[in-house]
Length: 362
Image (tube, rainbow, N blue to C red; front, side, top):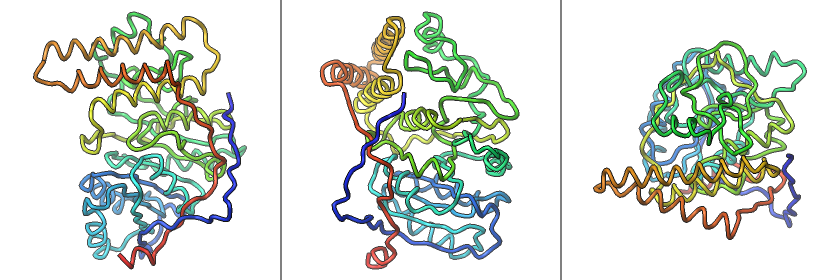
């Protein structure tokens, strides 16, 4: 179902300046028509390691933007010192952003200038030829029907399921749809059920850590302002919204690893509340007409997750995080029932620009 967007009058307000700096490339550009946006928060080590790896790649994007949601981490100085001693094959742009994954991504979009816009989490590791394979999907799509491409996250694929997932599937609370397909009960199956493949597959859901868009898509859509701070599901919501107008595919030849970093995550209670609230919001927005069985599956699955957390706490009472997570889920359920989350998406427009003078004044 298409999402209604509204025009918000700017009342004479122009774009907001975001402090940052840029270091132009001094070597030959690799993929000059590609930009990579890396949002990061309290992970200077991971962000620096990723950038160092990209500097040695034969298929590095011609523009890389680091959207730092926690400038006090020291990443700014680390990157300046590192870049000063290298001949970079890409334009490096660093921006000090307000914290929040969706906001950091949207700021990166506003500052970016290339036709193909890639996104990677700071703890991601793109394997050989990742960017070139993703780019070729867009270039070879003469009809320009494909609006987004997901990378193939190979770690975690084709593995035994966890006990929790075996029970969810065994009780048929989650239908056995293909990984990457969004079921009408508001879920999709885990990556462990997928096998490595070559070529392209149609999907509903992009992997949250690795994907790319055409510039035309981002002129019509931005990551939803509903999601604030550390969030889950913002990539799912964007995928479903873009999928109403464009084809979305996963490229099996563009392989990468996601080495999940522990830092920069919210407390267990906050995470539990956010998970159910965001999941409910996305489900209602994109699957407004559901069957009784879908609604039963949705709420039963959430009840099962609470039960798992409770059992985990009973077995390990010295670890209260599970109990806090369960309490957060229950609190989120109450909010969904008595005050359902709603949000009207504003029309996509440029809101930010890079302010080099503000950065120099700091």
